[in-house]
Image (cartoon, rainbow, N blue to C red):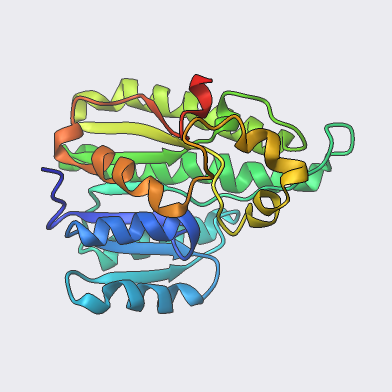
Length: 251
């Protein structure tokens, strides 16, 4: 079960952290993968993942806050994959921390462009292609802040809340075309974005104490859910937000 051999996958923000783990998981299960990231280091990451010779992995450089670059990167990715796309994982995301009173328009706009607008645009491009194929799996990266408000993360919480509703809306229209749309909500992950915060227990200890599993998440914790939702076996699962949070939301 959950074999992805022969599938064509696109992962955004795939050069590090959870995005890299997702790309690795798809590759390990047999898919050909394109990774989109902002740095040309993505080329080296693609070579590292593909070094076992299982299936090709490609890198594409693009700033997803720029719509022209986004569309160019999508078209380039599909071309690299031979004109087909079976799996899209919208993972790329950024955050900026300010109080609600001091949140700048510039940071709010940037977060929205990467975390929300890019998800819409890439999902629409992928969805229209997948409808023609009569097959597809779209997976979006949500967050615990899709459900709880958090602090100092107004732009991020707003965008991630919108991602969940976008996921549901798209799933309602595209399910009849054998295209599922789901999202994953990671818990507090000890990745590059959060490592300083996780290490400072004077700031983060109250959150760690609320995680029933008793530890921070790590990037590889996201692999199983990513593969499941991308698989043919998950064809009757659509419009859901799957928490991978060590039980945080059940507290």
